[in-house]
Image 1: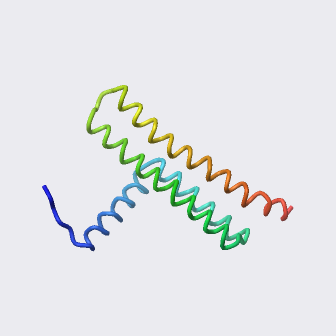
Image 2 (image 1 turned 45 degrees about the vertical axis):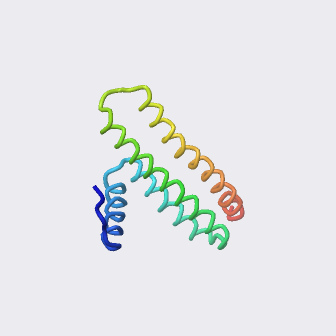
Image 3 (image 1 turned 180 degrees about the horizontal axis):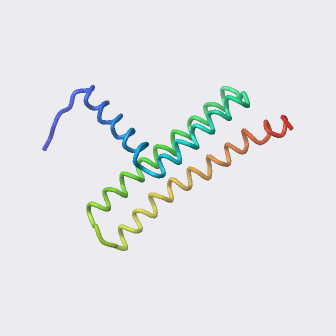
Length: 121
């Protein structure tokens, strides 16, 4: 079925998906809390414009991957309700993508924030 949506409806659906993710997904809530903490810390430490770009890009990548991971997991649960070894691999790889982006983002955060925190001490 090919249902055409107007632009407003497309944006409305996208915001609905974001809202559902942030309100109902455990990892979405965790990532939102981490995002708020990082933004507050960024303001408190007066990071540079270039550092803001890096921080915001990391936030966007990790949050986007977590949303895709959540969607893939829900789809896999609909496709195959019981345990299936291939579904497990799909879910593990999807979660691994989030983990990898989170590790790199944490390294970038350390590079940006640790020197500023040391300077304050």
